[in-house]
Each structure stands twice: as C-alpha cells, then as structure tokens.
Image 1 (cartoon, rainbow, N blue to C red):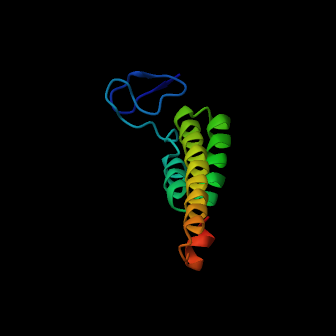
Image 2 (cartoon, rainbow, N blue to C red; image 1 turned 90 degrees about the horizontal axis):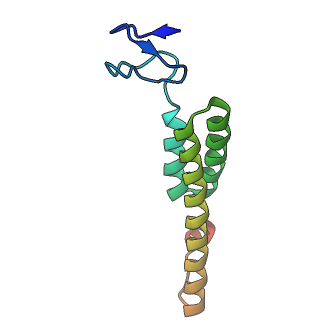
Length: 108
C-alpha cells in the first residue's frame, strides 16, 4: 500500500491525487494532453481529431483512465459531426450556385 508523501494518508490503487491534501501522486498523472489534443483537433481538423480520439479510447481502456476514454469518445463524435456539417454546407452552397473556393472544398 502507498502513502501520500505530503500528509501520510493511505492512497488507493488508482488515485491520482491524495484525497486528504490534494497532492498529485507521482507517476499517476492523467494523460490530459492526448484527450485535449483530440478534442481540439476534432473541431478544426476532424480527420486528425478522429485518429487521436481513437487512440485516446484505446489508451483509456488499457490504463483504466475513464476520463481519457470519455474524451476519446467525445472527440470521435465531434469529428464525425463536424465532417458531416462541412459536407452538408458545401453541398448546400453548390445547390445554391455559390462559387466555392478550392480551400473550402478540401475541408469537406
């Protein structure tokens, strides 16, 4: 059993911070960067957001990190929704006869 280095209270197996004094447990930090990157890319570059979301789901399951898993699921859903909205937007513009710049077409 491990104990907190700050206050000496007992730590659980999956605790990332001490429940008594909120001190982070070394080596158990959450993989915030992968989940955050997946969510950010999901909005702006959906394909990369989708790939990072899948990686976050896989790593979240392997590590038992529920928050990373949930962030991955969010990134996957957002990536799919943003892609569908972009495709519908380009299709609508084409139906209206609006000239679509090449850059907008490559985003969809």
